[in-house]
Image 1 (spheres, rainbow, N blue to C red):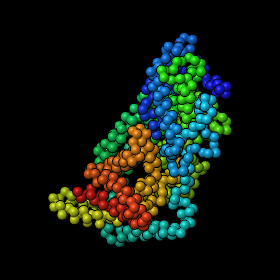
Image 2: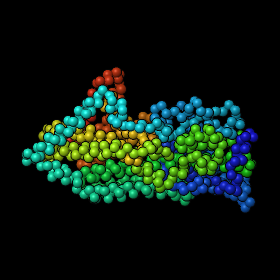
Image 3: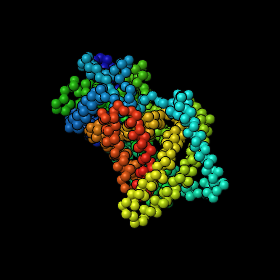
Image 4: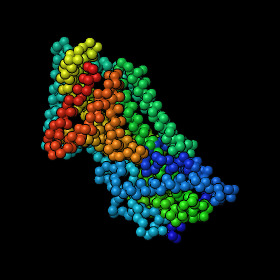
Amino acid sequence: MASDRRNLNRIPSLDERQPLETADSDISDADSATRDNDSSPEAVSSAVALPQLLSKRVSSAFRKSKDNDVSVHEVDQTAIELVFREIQRHNRLRIRRRGANVGSRKGSVMEDSKKPPIEPTEASAIDSQVEVKFRSSFNDTVSTPVYTSIMDSEHFIEGQFFGFYVAAWLSVTFYIVKHMVQSEFTDQLPLYKAPVFKIFTHGLVKVALTDLAMYLSIYVVFFIQVLCAKNIIQWRKTGRALTSIYEAFFMVFWIYFVVERIMKDQWIGRTFLILHMFVLFMKMHSYAFYNGYLWKILRELQFSEDYLERLHLGSVKLPTGYNVEETKKLLAGSIAFCKFELLHQSLALDKADDKKTLEMDSTALCSTYLSFPKNIDFSDFFMFTMFPTVLYSLKFARNERIRWRFVLEKVAAMVGIIFIMLLIAEYNLYQPYMNALKLRKVDLTSIERLNLFVMTCFDLVPEMFLEYLLTFYLIWHVILNLIAEVTRFADRDFYGHWWALLDWEEFSRLWNKPVHKFLLRHVYHSSISAFSLSKSSGVLLTFFISSVIHELMMYVVFGRVKGFLFFFQMFQLPLILINKSPLLKNHKTIRNILCWGGLILAPGMIPSFYLVF
């Protein structure tokens, strides 16, 4: 107990600390600390700017007298009891997590058996047998970076099948040469005079300016966090509400403005802008609610430290039903987890073990080892918006230098692939699209419309599948790696071996890893935590939201909401169950064939539904 008292004596005295607050605080909401896997942007220039207040419930609970002492009779016992109940619930959830890898990648274990567990200091004094190990709510922030994408890796380049990769690109090269020769010696229009190229280049300046305005508009959430950091507003009470309202406004405004106002006749431009809008939205949300989670942890730590000190000084009376020793144990557990979480997110647990940082108070921690809330500044937010990721964390792995030869290779690949995609769209897709659009307006019988649908599918499926593969290669291999190299972003884990998939669950994980990680953290885990959903319900909600967004993109492209893509997206769930059923479970080849059949047919068949019906 003597060592514990020495630790407590290191906490600033009461006359140096601001009064406690809690009511609508960051730790007293039902969607708080361990129940929320989200975050929020805030800005702080120094450790001195740390918010020391919690919120109104304890600002009214504790009031200082003229001599800076706290009168027992001035404590709002109901407010304190509500806070204690929240901390009790959080502690139970955190300890229950020891068997679950919440929000982490497979194999990412935060309970390293080689490291001593983080134990509540006061609890150890009360019960020498108490040992509590914690798991972070955001284990995905410490996953090992993948330094090369699959098709850039040495293993792939030196592999036995690299020749097929080279042969595929040689075939594409001959395809380009063929159309160049045809346009020269026949009456076929050259690409630069063709309709698709004109659509592509029309209004580029307008697209660029709109995109810049869209990008600048995400800084609103950053300034909301600046207000939180300066104690002008509290995250739980006001910051989160303002951020949520602005996110809704951001999405509705830009979809309407782009689709219905400035890009009504330029479907390529509006498709690019809306896709980028969703990327910016995910960045904005992840930055906001990840930091928001850390604000709640920091507020809880400050409250627990303050109240524990007041208990030792005998300056407060506990609410009815609470005894001193159990309350000290409760608060010590809260302090232990909060310090663990903040140090873990700052990647400073090893450093803390070496220098006994766990005995520091929150002010000392924030001014030394913690990256939060010092991360809340303009340069940090700007760099995050530049990185090819939509998932925010306090620290990102960086390379030491830019490989300019690699950059030139990716720039050349980007230009070449865009050229190829325009060729395919002009000479193989444009005319079938226009024919289907004209016939859609004709009064056809059901049989005639079905025949039109079948013929449109045959016209579109081969070329749309090729466009689908080129889109994957362009975005997830070329552009994301290009941005990563220019920004020295080290983690190149943008996609997995989706071509070897056995069911659609694997496809959803491996095709687009950045978005999958976002949905895993901010939709799946957050819905389970916030709404007490089961895992199956969390999966259903995640697929539902993803399906709605995909259907929205069909509205952007075709100007129609029919629900076809929404249906096929949701239909992946029963397909997953079928592929994992005893009938197919052990038939790897058949499962792969079924998945490839869907990949080949879907890119051409789904647009055919929107064009014909």
